[in-house]
Length: 257
Image (cartoon, rainbow, N blue to C red; front, top):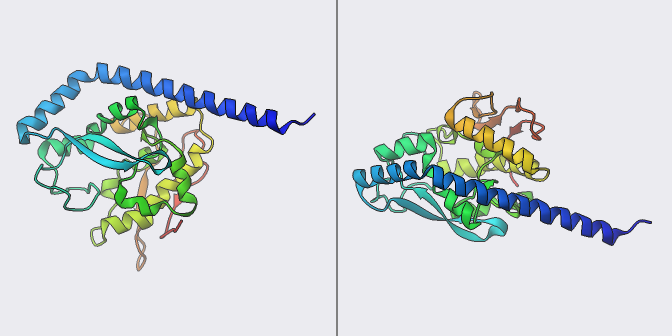
């Protein structure tokens, strides 16, 4: 006999087990990485200190799950006297970058302190990229559903937009271009993937993400900018060639939520 309550309880239990297994994975993975990478973390900290002194880390409020703010940590890659001036984005050849910061930005090593955020439970290893409060207004319409998932260090949209700093046209406002073009493309990928994710798929994306940072491994999808004559530049995301649950290309021309 059909029992809606039993089905609901089964679904709740499966959701709980999925969350629990993912949290266990986050704790184990981040703990191992913090231990194994501790010499590299120390070396980066010393390099930053020798070049420009303290602070070693950059702390910024980001939107967490359900829109609750948390402090995300990075290695500092900008000159310490920059303050809050400039766009809330890192651009290609950004003049605010230090010499060490340029290496950290290109290698993505500035993100390593987020393993501490993952251990604390603010973030997950795999999840949507946590947005700064400056872009909280982007979460409108269906895009608000992205906030239902815990933000992560890596994920499909991070892999696809690993070259994000090179996508901004020279004659455009970076923040506006991000709101109109890049954010909708990222959010579309996130909504498609995280609605049907599994722990195994997350682990595969972790492997793909690490390979993408190291610039080795399989051919991975990469965002590009299309700018036809007399057209506003827009993001073009090619169809992935890897067997993951992102079914089609992510394209946007000033898409609104």
